[in-house]
Image 1 (cartoon, rainbow, N blue to C red):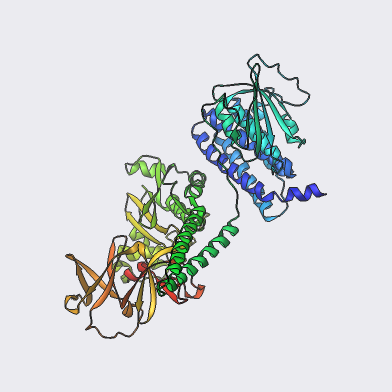
Image 2: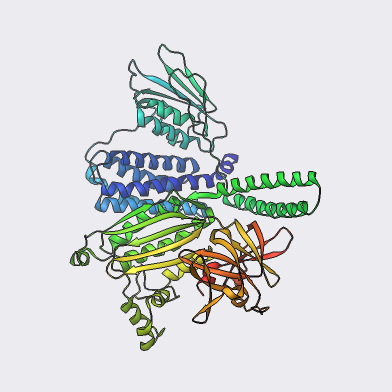
Length: 638
C-alpha cells in the first residue's frame, strides 16, 4: 500500500528523534533519582515517553509503543506520588530506557523489533502499589468536555502538508501548551492522535496561564507549523504564518524565526571532500596568477581565494558539534558501574559547550568511556577505604574540556588511590614484560607507558569492567589516530589525571611548508612558534645532543635529515630551523628551506604507513606535489 511505503521513508527521522528523547530521559532520570521531589523532571519525562509512544504508533512499531506506554504508566504513578523514583523503580526505568534504545537500534538496522513482555510486566509490577487508587481517565472523543470558563481562549494550529510525523508534532504542541496553561479540550483528542486519526488542523481550548505567550512563540517557531491562530472572546483573531506573526496585539516581541534542517553525515562528508578539492584548486589558481603579470587574472584569483575561504569556514562550522553530545552519555554509565561495584561517586563535567568536528567527537567516545571505566574500577576506592584514608565517602570524577591554541584539552581526573607503581612492577614481572632487575630500575614514565601496552593489565581477575588489558590500549590508539596525544599524571593516594590533546578538525588546517632534501613537509601552524637561522658557531653540544639558544633559553636541535635517516650535506653551513612547541616541550627543527604558509587539506595515510614515526598524514599542494605532514609530538618525544 502506498501509505506504508511512505511511512518507511521516515524511519531515519524516527531514529534521530527517539534518540534525542531517550537521551533526555536518561539525563532526567539520573537527576530525579537524586532529587525525587522534582515534579518538573517527571513532567518532562512523561512528555518524552508520550511523544515516543505517539511516533511509534504512527510508524507501526507496536513493541516500542507498548514499552513506552508501560514507562509512561510508571511515570504517571510517580507524578501522582504513589511510587518513589528510587531503588527498584529507578532500576526498572533504566532497563526500560535501555530496551527502547535497543529497539531504536533495530529500526536503524532495518531488523525486526523484538517484543519485551517480561520487562513490560516488570514495569507494571512497579506500579502495583498504586493500582488500588483509580487512575485519571485519558481524554477521548467520548469523554464530556469541560465547559470553558469566560476567560478561555482557542488555539488553532495548521501543520504543513509535508509534515513527516503529524501525530508526534501534535503531541509536542499539546505538551508545550500544558507547560503554561490548563487544557480544557482538544480536537483531535490525544487518544485520536495516538490512533492516527487524520486531521488538517488542531483546535485546543484552554485557560491561559501567565507564560502562554512563551509557549505560542515556541510553537510558532516549530518547523512543521504552517499557521497558528489565537482567538479570545471579544477580540480579533491573531495569527502567525510561516513562523512570522501577522498581528502583534498580544506580544511585544516577534517570535524568533529559527529553522533547522537535518542533513546526513555522509552528505556533509561528501561536501567537505569537494571543498577540500576546491581548496587545492584555489591554491593552484593563486600560484599561477602570482606568476603572471595579468591584473585581471590576479583580481579573479583574489576573489576565488576569498570565496573559497568563506565556503570552507562555513562547511567546517556546520560539521562542528559540542562535546556535550558525548559527555551526556557518561553520567548514566558512571551511575551503573559505581552501583554494581558498591561505590559512591559524583561526576562533574565542564566545557561541554566546546565544539569539535563531528568525526573527532564520534571517535573520542570509546577512549573516554575506557578512561572512565578505569577511574571507577582502578581509581576510586570503596566508601570504607576512602573513610580510612581520611577522604569523604563519595568519590569525585571530573571531566574538564578547554581550548588550547589549535587543540582541545580534555582532562579526566579522579580523587582515588592513584597509580601504585609497585603494583605495576609486579604485574610486569608476572606477565614476563620485565625481569626483576628491569622492573626495579624502571622509572614512573616507563611504568605508565606499560599501562598502554596491548594486553597489559594490573588486575589479576577478568571482570566485565576490566582485566583484559584492552582499555588504555584503545585510548592511546584511538587518540593517536585522530592526530592527538595522551598524557598521564598521578599521585599515589591522591588520584590520577589523564589528559587528551585533540585537534578541532581533521579536515583542513593552516600549515608552514618547509623543504628537506628536496621533499616538502607541512608543519601545523598551531605548534609553530617562529623561524630562525643559526650559524654553525652558535650550535652547542650537551651530552652529545645538539642545542641552540633562543633569547637565553637552551632548546634541543633536531635535524629532520637525521631523524629520517637522510644523508646530510655537511654540518658546516648555517642551519635554518623552525621553533615548535607541543604542550610544555619546545625544540628547533633543522630544515633546508622555508617555503611559506598555506592552508592544506589533510589526507590520512594508508593503514600500513600509520605507524611511521614523525609523519601524521599528507596533503596535495597547489602545484600537484605531495607534502608529508610532520608529527611534532613523536619527533619531540625522540
